[in-house]
Amino acid sequence: MIRSWIVIGGVALLIALAANLITPSDIQWFKRLQRPRWLTFEGAIPLIWTVIFICGAWSAYIIWESNPGTRSTWLLMGLYLLLEIVTIAYTPVMFRLRSLRVGTILGGTGFVICLILTLAILPISRIAVLLLIPYLLWSPIGTYTTWEMINLNPQDG
Image 1: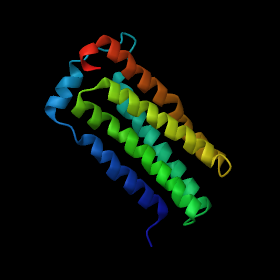
Image 2: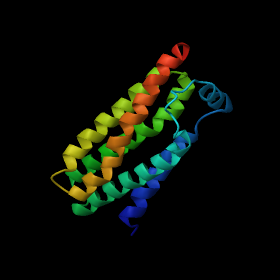
Image 3: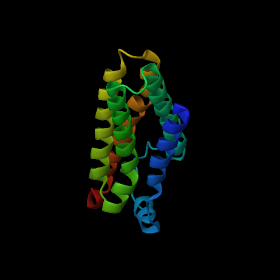
Image 4: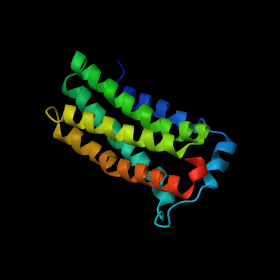
């Protein structure tokens, strides 16, 4: 039997690979955009998201192991899955549509989904909740940054 952490990690990794569905012209579009002056940590963003995704998968694992296979646990796994899909969609969808507004909407949607998920798992595991805190802290920063970029790049809003 395959261990649950392998399945959860494997699904997370497969979905994360969808972030690579971008073209060189998509990357060029994004690179030419102006950024806020205070955005000095852009190089750290991939590492930050890697940590956030690991924490999210670990949180999902804890929730699964707390009550494996039940209907309520499957529903929570669906929320974890939706959260990752919306989060991963940010880059390829925003790049493809060349719309910072779409990126802002996806970022805000991810935050709301994570908040709902956090409240749903609170009675089950405080450790699983703590593992979602990095998402809840970082997501608004990324969303705000994208929103600020609309003001600097109104043609790409």
